[in-house]
Length: 144
Image (cartoon, rainbow, N blue to C red; front, side):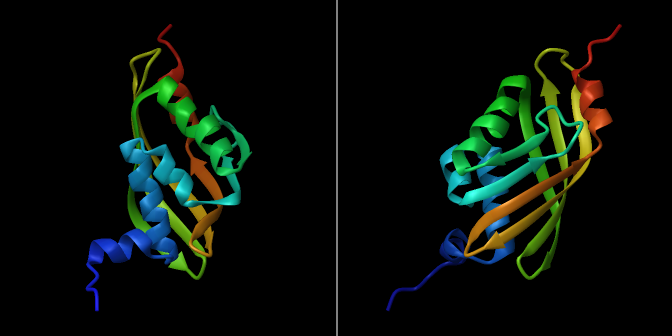
């Protein structure tokens, strides 16, 4: 009989909060392959209206190429710091904070956010972002 460690359990767990946490860890590490592994083939990923990347993206490759890779081009050290999880069945709401420095303006971003995930079968099938887009826009706007 093989013993499992908590790390092994977390790495393979299909529990919605664990899947979402793996997505945040992969994103922070810049590991797009691991991030794609958390997403369902038919994922719907919605960035909030008013956010620079506003829109709904589909497929794991569509999400990483249109969101994560673009954030990496426009921002230095873009990180979503997840701190509070509220889980109800397949729904996971995460309260988090974005921090980054805009590559064009050099301005820092520090904004509270909420993310709503739906997880089914161990994969994220839906994501919706809620953020104060004015703070993001301010960090992207050069001083007059």
